[in-house]
Image 1 (cartoon, rainbow over the protein chains, first blue to last red):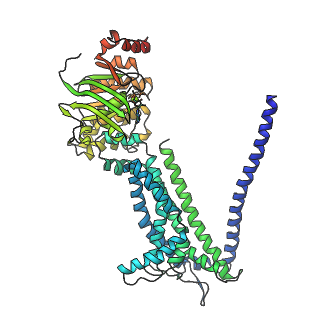
Image 2 (tube, rainbow over the protein chains, first blue to last red):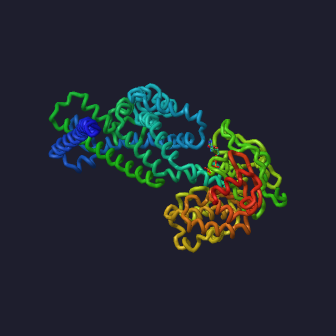
Image 3 (cartoon, rainbow over the protein chains, first blue to last red):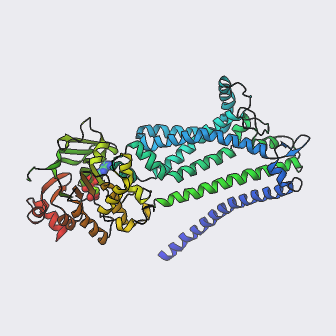
Length: 299
Length: 253
Ligand SMILES: Nc1ncnc2c1ncn2[C@@H]1O[C@H](COP(=O)(O)OP(=O)(O)OP(=O)(O)O)[C@@H](O)[C@H]1O
Ligand SMILES: [Mg+2]
């Protein structure tokens, strides 16, 4: 009789297992289909435009005559956002994490953590609006030649946007450093600054690095805020006060416009998306690899 | 109980609480110069808490409050003007589990003296500490290797070297052998005899044989109270308190 009950139980388990398998399979299938379509459309784009022109051309003008398909201005625009947002998010995020894990009392922690989560939960379109209506006017008070749409204001809000993620991941990395290590450092007469800066942070370095890589990867993929605030001017420049266009903003622009599907202009979407996808994929793999390494260190 | 000459450290009526719970209750204890003092007692009786109060390690635990005095040559370590970092320069510590820094063997030993600007040649200092900790022969050719590649016993001796490099006056050890095999344990016990010539040692241990072998004085604690303190020989062979006798014979025989 007990044997019978056991087999009934397993029967239910088998169904559940099938169900989970189907769910997992669907998500894998979706990924494969997306990558497949990207690959097909991108290769048909490259039948008409040479790879070198695409990768090294300095003019991006796929919708107007004379047409040009060099992705560098878009890449450059994205890089301006990445660098600018990193300058905001990485140091502040790390400092925030050091405060949270090494100095904050439980009470302070219980206030700051939820605030960071709220910051992370704000819709990105709100950040974009905030950039246009507050950050850009603010920049104009300080600098002269600030264009209405500019890379700097977008970069600043993207920085604020990824800051909670950096702070939270760095906090995890710092907290995973065993407290016995801190005690060892204190026991040889270290001050709390020395313990933090010279033992804890170095011990958590790979986790911190992984957090940085993920932050950069998110800044690269960020779309709404940069579309709203950074402009739609493919522009190979180092000046953050000018209007630029990022890869993501270009994809939005074309997707929303009336570009006929099937044409070359339409295929540029997939070519740009492939570049975007490749970069973020590489960044995420890198972060994963680094993260796994740091998990091994203290096991 | 014991003549009070040469007390380096003296706990006077020390009570330590975690929140409301008293882990150490009204303890009076003298630690004598260049002797080994063992603290024994059942798990949770407050040995580590008491030991950590001697170098202000409990400062890092939230909600700890302490009453009474810890005198270090007539200075109360908990007086307002006393800098806890300075306290730890005089009281080195070795922990239950080896906790080397994830740095090279050399840097593990050199780090403390360097950040504190201790005088003299750092290479000599590291070499001397590693020799005293009986580790030099095993690591002298690979000082730049990561300390994490050493065996558990070697790591613990490295941690002892790390404490010795600071040339403290007192070394506090919290069950330094509990994570080690018998061979490594024997090496560390031998080491304690050597170190006794120059250092005052306080060692917490669960191992009765170890306490009776290595220590000069033994303190027996039970649920936060110091039950008996005296010559190790006397505590183990002619305990004055019934409870000490029960504990010692129960574990011993
Ligand atoms: N960080 C802490 N917070 C709250 N209570 C604690 C803390 N550390 C220890 N205690 C409590 O204080 C009492 C004494 O603990 P302590 O670690 O000093 O005992 P011990 O004698 O060292 O035990 P063991 O032999 O198991 O190491 C125990 O009841 C323990 O639960
Ligand atoms: Mg203990």
